[in-house]
Length: 369
Image (cartoon, rainbow, N blue to C red; front, side, top):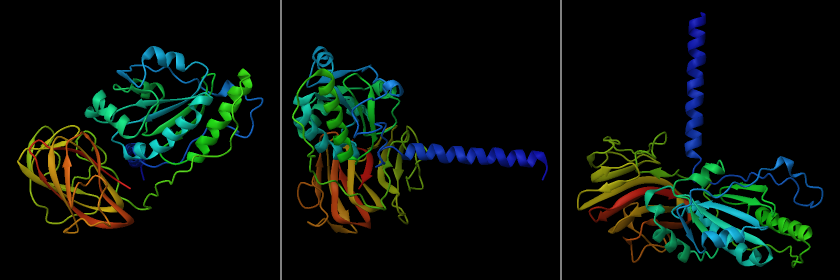
């Protein structure tokens, strides 16, 4: 084998490895991941060498402050243990962590814990403070939420994931870092230890407790369909549009009924406008078909429409109906948000069909659990 061929093979191999890594990076968004902790020893409060810890960055590029004013937040942050929760309200993984975060705030805010929800949006509609406020009200969030609409604070933390939780001690050093769902007991133990450390440093008295918040954790399917994106910008490197017509950026495309439906692929039917973030229904009616594997299906949408949901050719039953289905197999969409349409006890592979009435209906993504 001559040197040119060897060089070509090596170069080709590097390209393949690079593409795989890029694909892994893109597929990491909104996935459940194991925790990454930089809190060295939660059982020891003495002789902590903080030289190896980074300081939490400033909150920068904030478009809006909810539940607080900028001046009040600046005062609240002084000498507090701060949990920075990077989230966005249409992310199902973020939503599943909120019961724990709100419970921690209720339990520890009087002892020196401050929680700041850093709302870093994935989609354009998530930048609207009215939409975020509706989510705050729905999930009972009383702690401060800042709108990081241009992802400047996200970048300052060098973050790449939703959700992500950083905990800084009362001196501002990041002592804990958790990506994704899960790790709730570990996270709460870190909160407890850092509050004890703060009390010891400042001479304050706090009520010591070893009890932990007890909330049933969502159990993911071991094998499930990955998130499916309808916007051509988001679908780069993870294109799962099964229709022969494919993505055609900026064009209105008439998508035909598919001859077959492959697992993990989606198939719009009717006239749809191909946008960066979504597909928008141009015709008065249309439909979407997909074959998925999971026990839970969620749909991220915007604009008014009436949707009829069918599973394996049949209307939904009490064994699989999602919490946002209004009656029978009907879903009425109005707010720009995530809707739960399928919720089953057990995971399985199914054909999902959605019949849509509502010109202008926009669909952004499917997520699964």
